[in-house]
Image (cartoon, rainbow, N blue to C red; front, side):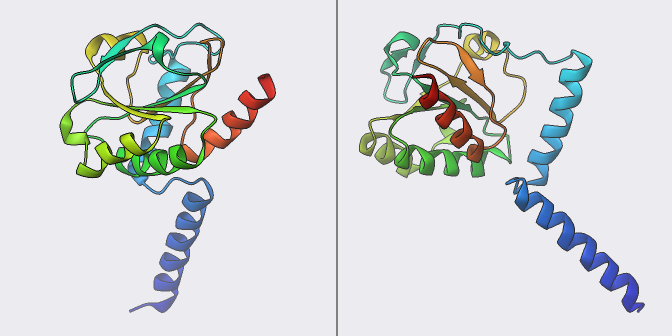
Length: 183
């Protein structure tokens, strides 16, 4: 076996992992999603609601059957929309939950498309924190927010305007500081 080829391959893998870690992207699926999302936006295939535009009103239910509408949720608000077929979503859900526990100045809403996206401990977390909700998404909601890719983050400010689309959970810190500066 040629050791120089082996060493070169190992070095390439190490550098790739290092770059992914720097970007806080721990899933190649997520990296591919980001690349295709950017290409789609550039080509005009996928249009998000422009930043600064009023967020659409919505009504969603939780898994206990309680109705939650947009006007009753506290602001600023961070939405994470996930799909049970999305392999990159599980890491974001875990980080989102962790972030909600430590950031009381924002409200966090996890929007899932089915009960398959939930774990038994999710219900306990929702009860323990006052700034975290888990709601069941529907087609109307996805259309209003033009959700085409998963996971999708949306940050909404006090004035109900969309202020950003974080790429990963760690980007929420930036928006948290930006929102604090607005107030």
